[in-house]
Amino acid sequence: MSVDKGITRKDFLVSLFAKLNFFYRDVDLLIIEYDDQREWKGRTSAIWTECENPTAIISYQQNIYVATYRNESLLMCFNTNGKVLKQLNLGNRWIRSIDVDEKTGLLYIATRNSISTQSLLNFHHYTHWHIPVASSLGPGKVKVNNGICYLSMPDKNQVLLCQLENGELLEKIGTGQGQEKGQFDRPLGMTLNNKCLYVCDSWNQRIQIFDKKSRKFSHQWGENNIKQQRFFLPISIYYHHDENTFFVGECYSVQIFTEDGTFIQQIRGWENEKDLFNEIDDSCIIGTDLCVLHDQLYVVDRRNDRIRIFNKS
Image 1 (tube, helix red, strand yellow):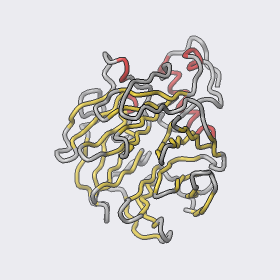
Image 2: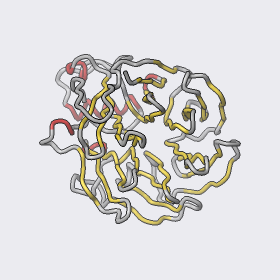
Image 3: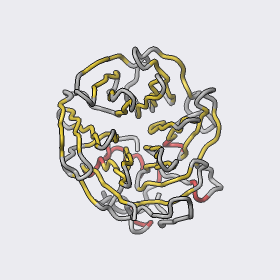
Image 4: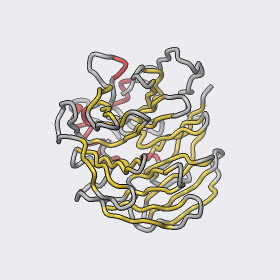
């Protein structure tokens, strides 16, 4: 995609979102020391092209599950070598997001106005309930944790907390659209650890962190005065339990942080900063969703109809 040299940043983003059909920075690779001294390689180690228009990805047990949508939705199960093990047709619903309950093996599937469950053990269909708040866009992300279903709602600028079994609305996080603490502008990706809920506040270029018990705003990543906490449209976020690190998928890169927000590394898809406003090509990382299994990072590159895999050196 070529861009007029005189185009404003806002106009460029609007044009980009339109071409990506999604709500969707670029600095040199920087490494600092932390417990695991191995780096994530900046170059793709493998590419899976079997996924047409991939929308979401998770890891469960030893496999990777990818939701795709073109004329109909598919749930594809891959081993770590990229071999398709199973494929399930989910009909003509556009899947916005998926998440799995590790204890039960139930997959939670978010479409524009409903949540359904599918067992990853026997692929039987179980529950189905409607999202309790009407939305023209549907959820940006679904996460399940301790009996609660978390749904980020980008057009409502809120996060919904629903009863996992029946969708009963328990609480809303977010006080509307804005830049103040606790306000959102297009919340998308989410993740949780034992203490907090992390939300990609995409158009505010930050990650907002809320206490999981009180549901109150705690702090944020993305302060303007902290150079190594700057984001360019954070879309997705993944918590890697084994290493206690966070992976943030942006419009053109993946950034990695420690639990306290200390920057570790950035994996990017652009060779030069000037390329950002010139052309989108096949080197571009657009991290609409991501996950980690063992020492491999899997990134949904939706625009290029593929999954990109990065290894640790």
